[in-house]
Image 1: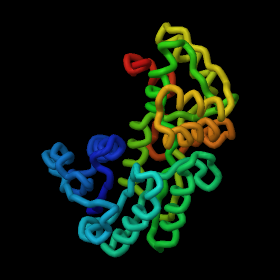
Image 2: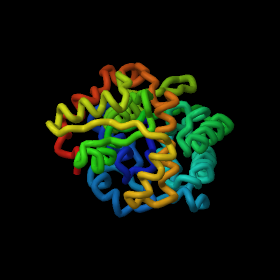
Image 3: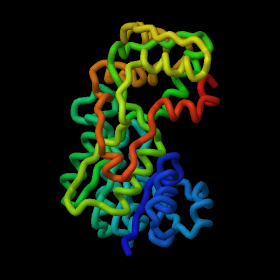
Image 4: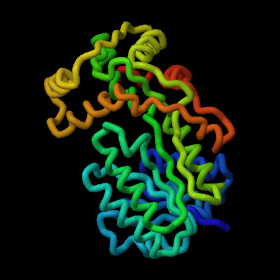
Length: 291
């Protein structure tokens, strides 16, 4: 039987992928290996019969052993912006050394051209995967619907959402739909190398989204377009760390440029069902809006 290794297994996406491997794709627990740098956070998976292993991408000397005895290796992109390329390269090298048959990786939409600051790290990782000589599947994840919860924390209480995205559109997708698609791709991979764009089924402007949130919550919300520079000043004024501000502004810059607007049928192609709409998602989670 094919054995699947999932890195970042203590994170939200990793946990959801493993849940869908078990419950949706019907993979036996004995054929899943969960990996994290903090193995204490994997006790719940271990109790289900899943093998758990400790591995830190920043300590490459131990990775090959942690990756041993599996066929498929899913590398969930780390959160170490600025250090990801070296970490991912270490994981790629370890998977090859351990004899894995196929690499899977969670990338982002349009990594070669996107204006999101960390896009070049995803592009470099994709290039490293191609250079490894291993068969591969790359999942280019769209923008999480869950990202809107943080945006609304400051916007809904004052009824104003400041953005420099202008008329740019985003094809938001729920994390769970991404996880379901990744699990399906792991459980039944293509024979050839494959790249999937995991997006929602509609691309909306921030004005569209503000109107939708206002209707769902019953609270007034207007979207105001500002420049990138004005947005940066506003983010600094509310106390966000200076090093975080350019990253957040780059999200709006990328949205304005159309980098997050792609609509693909790949989620339905992998899973047999369409991803949920933003309206349905927000209706189901409206208690989290504006916290």
